[in-house]
Structure formats: structure tokens, C-alpha cells
Length: 202
Image (cartoon, rainbow, N blue to C red; front, side, top):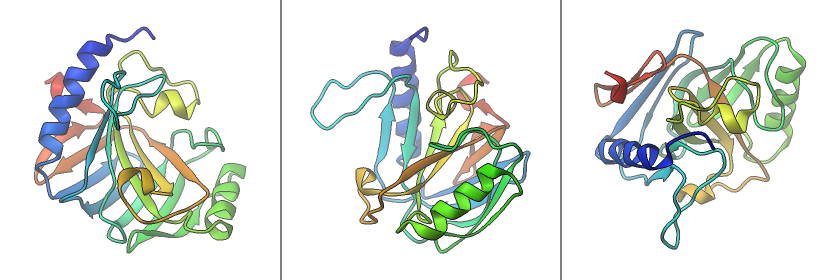
């Protein structure tokens, strides 16, 4: 509520204009994330406090731009060191191995890792890489709440599970965001986020 949502919306539209021209995304982080996926042709969503037309969306708190990677294409490693939807802040980082757009293993010794592993192993299509989002909101704080932290400026979140909202065809009872700290995001060689610093901040 403390953010300048008009400014956030302007930034979101700038990021959307850049993002929708790109064909590949590469996400890394200081904790060890290294994930690649093709993104060409997928819709980019701006959620920055304004829903002025039918079919647009907003949330609270707000301030993110997101997209679904092409289905069954993401490859690499995700190291989750921020909060996870419905699970909370992991006691230690959780490592997910991704092949063909699906999580094939979950490594971690915390109760949160055990819960995430159980969800992925037992819920239909919970292993699907459904979304990648970049937070823009400078007023969001690190407090263990995934709803706030996924919107925090410079954070990335990667979601597993259902992708119907994003135009996909993978249905699941869950759509779970997982926050990544200190990410670097490169799209077609263009550095959009550098260790949590957005290109707007240069």
C-alpha cells in the first residue's frame, strides 16, 4: 500500500515491452539457481496495481511482471531460498532439478523440503514449471510472506503446478510460487536483473 503504483505500472509496462520481444530466459542466483527456458510467443502479464480493462489482473500487494515458459521445456536447477506458497520460509535452501519442464528431484533436509517433495510427488502436475515472475515493488519487505516477497523489487519467483491462467494446458490443484533471492535474469543476452538489481535502477 505504500508503493507508488502509478510508477510501478509504468515500469511494468516497460518491462513487458522488453520481455515480449525475447525468445529465451536464463535465471541464475547466488545460491546456485541455473535455469533456462524458451519463452517466445508466451503472453507477458503485468500485475502492478491496476486492472482497468476486462481480462487484466491485479493483486495486493502488487508489483510484478510474469510469464509462462514454453511447456515442457525448462531445464536446469532451481535453488529456493525464499518463502514458498503454503509452506513458508525454508530453514535452508531447497534444490530442485528440472528436466523437460518438470521437477524431477527435490533436495533438502528441512521440514519445508519434505513438504514440497511430498506435494510434487503426490499431486497431479505439481511438478510442472508454470511461471516465472520478476518483482518490482520497493516497498515490499523480507518477512517470510511469499505474497509480499514475490513482489519485492529484484526478487524472482518461479511457480510450479497449474498454468491455465497463463495460457497453458497443464491443470493441477496447486499453483505454488517459490521466491529466489539475489537473482540474475538474462533474456536473449540482455541482463534484466543483476543480482537483485533491476535494469531500471542503472
